[in-house]
Length: 379
Ligand code: NAP
Ligand code: ZN
Ligand code: ZN
Image 1: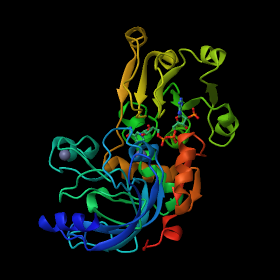
Image 2: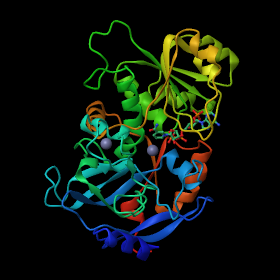
Image 3: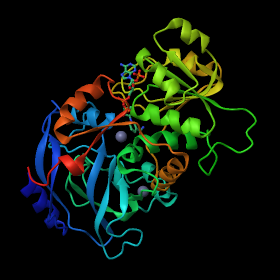
Image 4: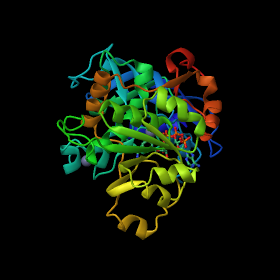
């Protein structure tokens, strides 16, 4: 496979001379095992990065199991990448070797459509090329951050603020920007990424599903002065949600009494649930004009009776990661507010067990792979 990749790239004039080791899935069993891969040599606009940490997003799990029916194997997942610059191309102005940097879900976009011009590469009209499982411009398939090194166009690299540790900051590259951008672009924040100054009434936001995205959503919403209620299937998460994450309330979604007590109380709900669940009971938690903001990506079509949407003038919205400007802004805002992920740092050889636990919502609250110390540059 590596030889085929290199040949395809060279045919299009881009050399894949770099070697790296990735953790690859070879089929829909999702089992990950070390694989030697190639990385392209550093182009004029490129930043070459030694990967030190990579967060494990539920999208990685959906992808390796082919739950979205788009898997290309072998697949090296991972789009919450944190590391150190090793080399830069001659046009690169924002980074130099030694810099602490991150890469999220995208590695290139068309860079010329109206979305890209406005900093919303995440809605690029030409189609985003994702960090893994996408066909890159040179015809090769992208490999993600469960690997020792990556080479990425400067535009898609962000700088880690000094106050942000690489390990606890890595999950912000996807989980963080996804919930931050959802809040910002659906009216919960002002243009500078904070709660609107002088707002008379505190917004009440529900966070549905307390996993990787959900726990960061709680932290950002609290940092921005909102009232936050977690809506969860896991009563065992209640105490730490209240005590450690700072949530104001916790509703067990299977408890009819608790759901009734919370009815019609929330301005918005950020729905991070990774599984197919009916939306109707949760629409009832929204105030009139409330918004259900979908970020979770379960496999089947959403189920929502029209009356539950229309009565009370509710909005059903979606939000896809965030643009590069928002990603850098989010990291800077997070560093200022001390928002970082709660992580379980794991060795590369724990990754399959970690995936099994992630599938059971058994993680507090993001697995991060200690790539730098546990994944060696040879198989
Ligand atoms: P995660 O860590 O696994 O968290 C998902 C949470 O959903 C779980 O912790 C659990 O919370 C809840 N949940 C899981 N199974 C459930 C079920 N059967 N019924 C009800 N609740 C259930 O996942 P994540 O990494 O935060 O990702 C969440 C979703 O967002 C995934 O689908 C992922 O693909 C998607 N995503 C989307 C974007 C985007 O751009 N829109 C970006 C990143 C990820 P409780 O234990 O509290 O119930
Ligand atoms: Zn993700
Ligand atoms: Zn574009």
